[in-house]
Length: 231
Image (cartoon, rainbow, N blue to C red; front, top):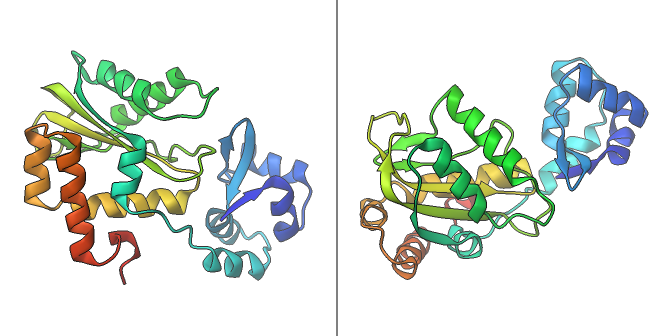
């Protein structure tokens, strides 16, 4: 559940100026979407509780009633695209190539997105092992999109990504979401399907997009629902 600054004033019973001051000086989490600041209801609740700021109970109740469901991973990946033969001599170059292929809204500074992804990698690799990485920043890439999207880039040549198992990376999944809960649910779906050996083999052989999507749909069908929404 995403809030404008004006909506947040109602739950926190303060002015917009106070909220802006808290964002700058006290670490109230905020996300810029199309040049406007937005807040996530759950993050606001957690921050207010930790900082002893009175907050209306209605905020948490409404956030729990609006769980930000996400489409199946196969739908998000079909929208975000599967790109083969992505080239780059090193991690920085590959990240720029990945960002160039993301379906971002017009006006988004792609150089900035690439820079924050690279800065995140400098803090610790997002390589999860077996040649797969999920580049992301501490605060997810939140943009004004109708639905979350996942983009898969399959590299021409594996590169050193500093992954946990030391193996070079050949497949990178990047998530673009409009809210933090949607981002986390999308990551949960990714985590579920990437446990499948058959899908990992398809990624390693750089199989055509139709085969990769077909395998993900099989996994979704076997589960009966997207992994993020299963009990």
